[in-house]
Amino acid sequence: MRYSLKQVLLFALLSATVLIWGVTAYISYKVTRDEVVKLFDAELEQSAHALYAFVGHLLYEGSLYELWDLDSPDNTLPTNQLVSKYRKKIAFQLIYKDEGLILRSQTAPEHPMSNSLNGFTRTEVDGHLWHVFSLSHDKDEYIIHVGQRDDIRQLLKDDIASHLMRPLLTSLPFLGLVIWLVVGRSLKPVNRLTRQLALREANYLKPLSTRYLPNEIVPVVDELNELFAQLEKAFENERRFTADAAHELKTPLAGLLTQAQVASKTKDESVRRQALTRIEQAVKRMTTMVQQLLTFSRIESDPGYLVKKSVELGREVIDIIAELEPEAHKKQISMGFDHHAEGEVNANEFLIGVLLRNIIDNAIKYTPVGGKIAINLRRQAGLLLSIEDSGPGIAPEHYDDSFKRFYRCVETANKVPGSGLGLSMAQRIAAVHNAELSMAKSRFGGLKISLYFPEPVSIGTLKKTRKPKFFNRNRNNPITHKSQAGI
Image (cartoon, rainbow, N blue to C red; front, top):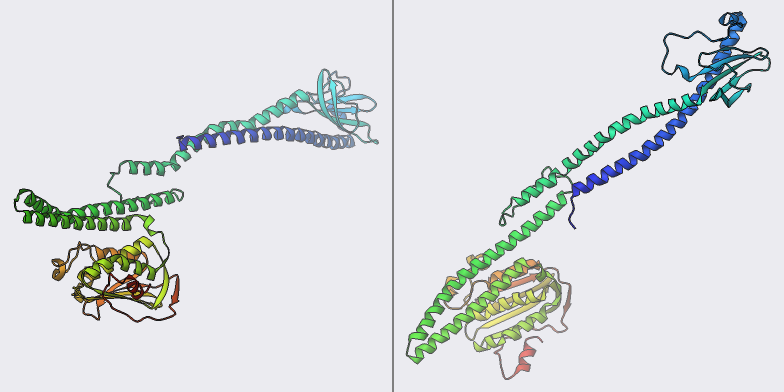
């Protein structure tokens, strides 16, 4: 299911904000009203104490009686012309214990607000509920009542709470706008990255820039760049394979067409057979070359080929010798395996087989009739495998070139069929196994190729060291052949 990350973030953030804000506002409203009630009660008490002290001072000076006329029907204090809007919230009464009410504020009722001498009370006077704090002492003749009507108190509480809540209500839309802007701005790098990818051509696989990207997106871009690099490598391998195949198949296909035309037009049976034989040879050569190209391409691009396990190197050499023995037998080549050490290497079994087959097959191809091939496996910190032949060899200045794709020495290119891929493929396989492939001059005058594995899994030593033995392959004595091959 597809969804918008921006919409999800906005909905989640705005919903959470409104919910948390609503709960907070409700709690704040309740707490504010409760605190206002406590504040009003404290104000009543404080006002009562202040009036008590003031009245006591006036009585001491004898000036209290000047503030009222006992014969007046409304004994109230004169009002101040500068009246605040909260002036009616507090009312007070001065009551003599013998004479009753003698002085009151303008907002106070004409009857005593409470019958209590001290403390808080709630009484109903003239149809209104009053919150009253009374203050008096036993030795005094008067009582101070300071009160507040409940309806006025409720109005004041609502007024104060609304003043508190109004900024919160006003700020909520602005908060939502800020969240919308922040989310939109935060997702701009994602939108910019999307546009960059949308404008890319299929063959443009250069890495994306991670500049000005947030840390959360950088790993995604890094993985995309890694994928682009792998794709570019795969495409390059594909292009290289296509170019190599086209280059290498061009000449054999032309020759194949020529021989096919000769075979179809000639009336000479011997010429036809010769042409068909050359066609067969050309097809075999192209088949081998295509297989080598495919193998090489898979080595470079398919990670599955890099799955490794413990491989007994000596056993692999023996298997390859047994596989290629018929070709050596045709040329009467003496091939010996000097098996000084046993050892396992961490390698891909298939690729190791391709590597060994290419090296030994090249030795057989370039070794003349009746020549010699010596294969030696010994321990040297790691495992060292060497293959020496008595062929024409390669000049030292051409050693590096011999590992290049499709390179063939001028001296042997026209004498032995090949594609120039065997050694290049062998070197690549050795590299992916952290092995070293090198060339040197053979003791027989030909080429010596050494394959060195620096860190084998395990190494053992044969109970009996065998010296190199060279022999002619005797097809009629396979047991002797196997024994001499080190099996």
